[in-house]
Length: 153
Image 1 (spheres, rainbow, N blue to C red):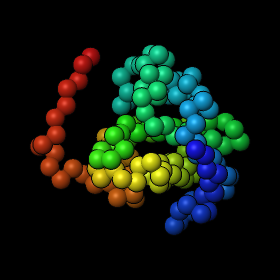
Image 2: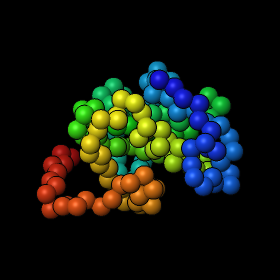
Image 3: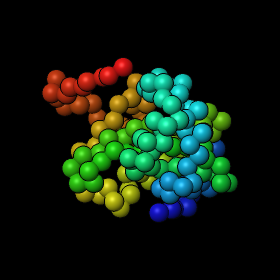
Image 4: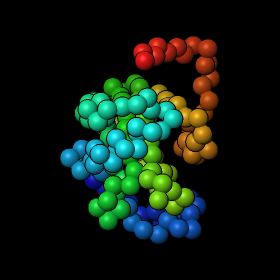
C-alpha cells in the first residue's frame, strides 16, 4: 500500500521547509535494509543489532518507509495484533532531513493506516520525542506501575 503525501494536506501548521512531496509506503520490498541497519546500530534505544536481526524484525512488523525522490529518508514499524494492541518502534528520519515535518507525516500516515483502525491501545517508548507523539494523542502511561519488562542482553 502506498500513498503520495503532501506536507500541506497533512498538518494543521506546516513547517517552513516542508515543501517537498514525500511518499510513505508499506511495501517492504522498497525498504533499504542497509540504511535502516546503519541508523539503528548506533541509536540509544536500539541495542546493537545485526543486519540479520533488523531483517527479522522487519519481517515480523508492519513497516512504513518514508521516501523523497525514491530515496528512503525515514522509517517506522508497528508490532501489532491489528485489533487490541500496537507498539510503535524504530521511528527515525535521516539527520539530513530533520526539521522539515517529515516525522509528523510519517506518524500521521502510520496512525491512519486502514489495517490499524481497530487498534484500541497504542504504546511506544521515547526518551526525547514526547512533543512529537503528544501531537497525535499519546500521553504518559496512566498506570506505569502496572507495566513490566524483561530485558535479555
